[in-house]
Length: 369
Image (cartoon, rainbow, N blue to C red; front, side, top):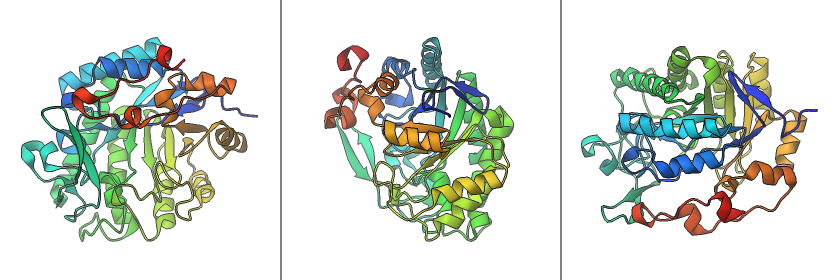
């Protein structure tokens, strides 16, 4: 019987166990450049079978929060190379989550203080995080976006392709396309957000077109075996909703089955919240993927502990399971899970410590032992 601590392979990526470190936005990269703190943070967590980095913007336009890293400058890529080298030196594997936030942004974060872009010109009922020049941070309402012109969309597909190539050149083992949580690709998918009348709006097929164009471009550039994608069928994160998520994501998953991807990353329920937020048949989604010929690893995420993860792996509901917040206070989470050792809790300062100079350092192995 397959076990949580057994090795496996996700596409072209061989991993030592089935415990994945989920992407966790930390806002610790001023000027969008990873630094020594990022190196330390990820290297300490290299015993995870796979690390998925914090969401990382593919372009300046893709930025939506203060001090999140990017993939679009030499300094940022040099910073990431130090991270990937450190993780590999510690025996780990790491992929970068490629991010375009779409309308979940603020004009102060955009090139030339421009409007964020989206599938719509309607503002999200959501907030982002800004850092002032004095280092103080605060939440702010997202800005009104502008709907992308049809002719602009191929350029953003190209941005994803370039970012994927840059990521591999920076030493990443692969990339995860962020298609979840109400960000740009998800904004195109959702009927409650996407109000377009061109070939990217209206029917499910049209709304999914952009996502498939991105997947196609990235897999052709770096190979399907090093490409993954994240989806969140029913999460309300960032004002995301759709009246018929089951047929929408069944169509998406059947289309993804045509690519021999590394893995499909599925968030169950509300991201970081209730797993049963809305009715949705995740087993049926998995079955539809397999029936369509899909062979990628199936990753489940949201509120998992060891017992739930072992059940998911043992039953075949998942090939790997992603753990999020526990990795922040427990760099050695894999050891603790294996030994059934107590986990460190998290205080608000550790989870959401202020911006810039006020940031709390990450716990180190010595500090949490």
